[in-house]
Image 1 (tube, helix red, strand yellow):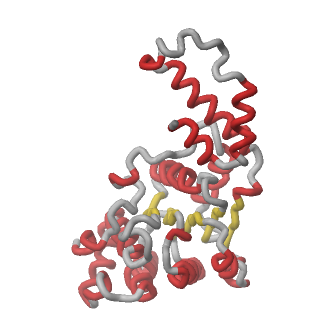
Image 2: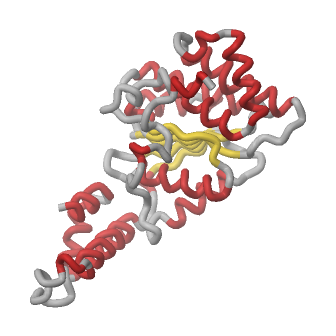
Image 3: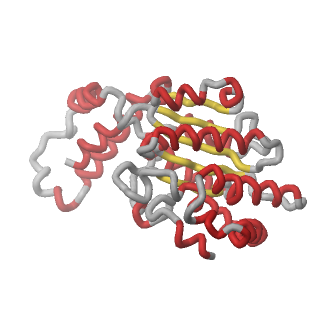
Length: 284
């Protein structure tokens, strides 16, 4: 399929760029991931958009990767796209919908046929069309045609991580409006899980009456138990170091417990509820 030439490199959750990228520690974020998992599996979602927001370093991308993993294992992942400000392919929305359409086409041959037909009728869709036109012809119309044909499409989700890392603010807002347009259609079979920093211009779009009614907002600032989760990450990381054979000699004479619980508590305090602090400590 020609569409493969217009996939953003490294944007998909299982691409080489995402290989070994951090996910949530298995003993953290349990309630949050459970709640998201329940939403993912809802046959008819009351809110077609689940929007998770939090400050830089709060662990949004780790959560998105964990949701991708859960949804893949359960057979509910339709597509994923990870924005990145430092990547020319991923710091804009030019290849967002071609990348998503390619993944959807790979899920089902019949759906792939609908998408291919749209490209044959208008080849510029994949290289020179506006994101509005791409979304309409490559995502919305093929999915609706598939459902209207009587076939059962995957009741799944599309995951978009780091929308705020798209460098064009107008494009960021347009993406939200387009996704909302899709879930307004009663027959549209997919939900959208989005992560972002709490940027004012995005909050402004989400607070409009139509979009607010179809969106479930998740604020990481309001999540309970974050300090305990950070403590778990630190304790687990230090335990790995302590049991690593390459450090065995160097740490042999170090008093136990190591580090002292007081030191762990001070690190948790200094983290200010930011997981990036804990991961940076463990790196260095």
